[in-house]
Amino acid sequence: MSVPTITRRTFLTTGVAGGVVGAAVSVFGFDVQPAAAQARTLKIERTTETRSVCPYCAVGCSVIIHTLGDRSRNVTGTTVVHVEGDPDSPINRGTLCSKGATLRDDIVNERRMTKMLYRAPGADHFEEKSWDWAIDRIAHLIKETRDKRLITQDYKGRSINALTAMAVVGGCTDSNENNYLIQKAFRAGLGVIPVEQQARI
Ligand code: SF4
Image (tube, rainbow, N blue to C red; front, top):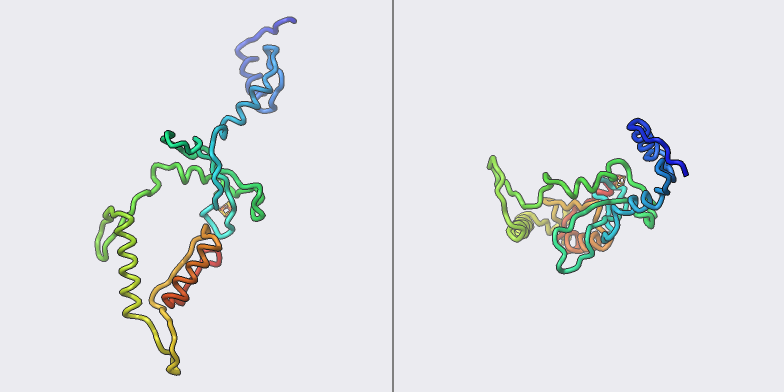
């Protein structure tokens, strides 16, 4: 077999053309298809798949998040390498819009907030707080609001359990089970009237 003469120009041209049309045989005479196929699978090779929901809008498209590593105990530094639409989802059938397609950059982002920041009433700055502190604070404010503002009788004197001084808004990633618990705890339990969901807004 005669070996073709390779100039800098033909090398570059072939490289570009090979990248575009996926040429099966290189100018060097060997089959590059297996290598190209291998390169295509490398990104999600050895990743762990986690199914979740895109948090951006009320459509609630299902996604598969690929995380490097297999969750073994001695694996550290796991990171999300790819996010794609879930083909098993009846909602999006594997597709994502241009915003959902950027989800990985939302997860792996140095500007992503990972700590609780609190701004006290009237303050001009945020303070770092723990999640335990935040949960205690929320619980305290809920009780204080209910103790002060619960409406126990309607205009005809009938007994009611109505709290209109606070509201609950769920997110589009909440499951049916989450929403059931929210209704049970806040509407049936505490009497909160304004209970809404991002998926309905
Ligand atoms: S992928 Fe797009 S359409 Fe689907 S939930 Fe996310 S933002 Fe909404």
